[in-house]
Length: 134
Image (cartoon, rainbow, N blue to C red):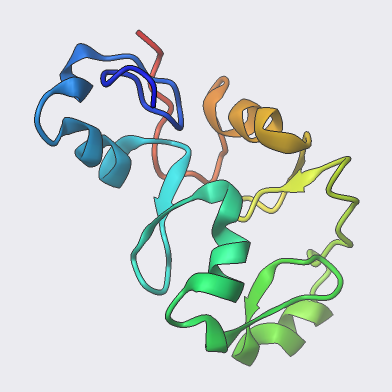
């Protein structure tokens, strides 16, 4: 574990995060590296949305992995999804990550996620704004 006033996900340093439930509140509402599962509401890392929906979520039986883009798609929507032009063939994981929010290919590894979700304005489809590190 690191310092109690630094978010382990986005590295935000704020003395208030070490007080009471502030870190949990940051996780639940503000951290741009985290989000709520669209199905179960669990707070998960954005980088693991597809894995969560396919392997962990209580609603995982309603999802399947698209063989072309490798994203978790509702089984009821899979045929329509495959017919769309925006279902882009996934590139090798050692070369790219694909953001489940904006569906853009981003640099690989943890650094790619941090760059996409934390730098500048962050992911254009992320509802949690990037907060300047203090």
